[in-house]
Length: 174
Image (cartoon, rainbow, N blue to C red; front, side, top):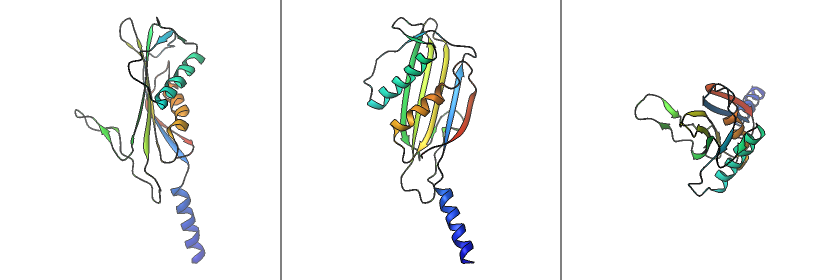
């Protein structure tokens, strides 16, 4: 009986500390290969994290054949948000939630935060949407700077082939 209790307790504690991260991804835009040159406006003073996110996005686009040019045909916007995960984001004119609140796991020692990266490419000539992708994750221990590369990769994963909203799970530090 004691052996069964200890085994059950150990299994419960292990499940509570699992290292699986769920990434929520949303993408929309042109279902074709979007390429060209891009530009962005410097309208706000970036924080070090937002500057790092923009650098990661820029580098990823350059690797995919895009060019950074002040007279580019696409406007690039990179957004970064951090909020307590216990708060839900919703809309006033519809059911559901843009981002649900996350409950704290049993025996969790810190409060979760939601990290969200958004990437939007619009056509400068007509304002049409070329691509919009976002990725969000909840983290308790992982700092934002460590989560950003994975979030940027996920936000750009559907570039040229938007798939709507979906979730993926990966091994990682919560």
